[in-house]
Amino acid sequence: MGGPREINAELIGALPDEGPVVMVNLVRYRDRAEYKRYSELTMPLIKQRGGTVLWAGNAEGVAFGEPHENPWDYVVLVRYPSRAAFLDMMASPEYARANAHRERGLEKHVIIAASETYSKLKP
Image (cartoon, rainbow, N blue to C red):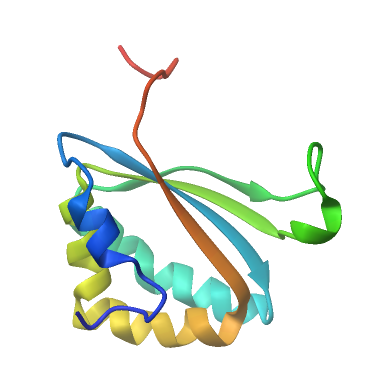
């Protein structure tokens, strides 16, 4: 796989892929401008695979838990139609080019795959 070295592709690929998945991104900046460039390059890749950003916002502080263990700057919820769509994007040459900006721009980046059990957004 040509994606970032941190991707747990085997784990994501082994999870049931029976519908949409939300990727919860926790971000700590090194260089905010580089991360902005990464986001600009990645948005078309997400959309091409039927994905969308549900929500994004600045992390203001740890409301529950150890603040020094969780110094996040930004949170993004990205919905993909399937885990396969996410993995396809991560393995693409276009993502590899965008990923260089992510690696320069971020001190730490965690992505948690989450399957929906409840949503007010459902029709």
